[in-house]
Length: 134
Image (tube, rainbow, N blue to C red; front, top):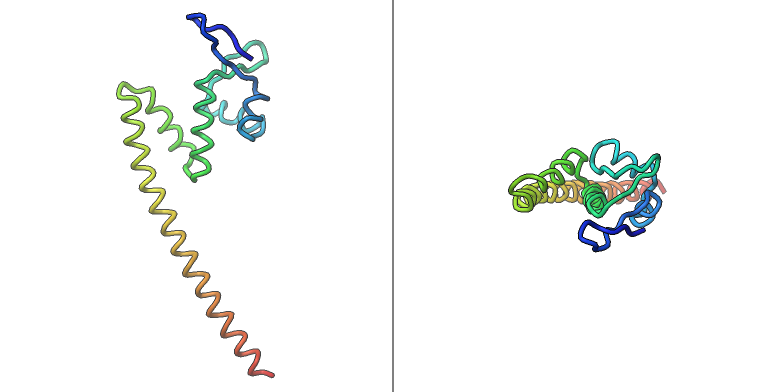
């Protein structure tokens, strides 16, 4: 679905079905992000019309979710883009959040590796005790 832009160039828009299909999410998920104010499609009666800005914001939301960021952090990241320093503020903030998320994930990995090692040691002990019982 394309509509003419102000300067005559095509200004692409999408329906909720198109945007949900493209990103592999449900209509309900898209509406949820809209209810939270993370995206704000134009309304034509009961139809939602998504613009490039909404599409970009949805891509950022979904990337943030995949990486484990809470929605409030995602909102902060997205909203920073609209501030006077825009992209610079957003990137500086994102880099800080990436460092924190990476540290959290590395700690979780270390915890998982320790738990697996403990399970393996316990398994060896249990097998040895079982063999001793005959």
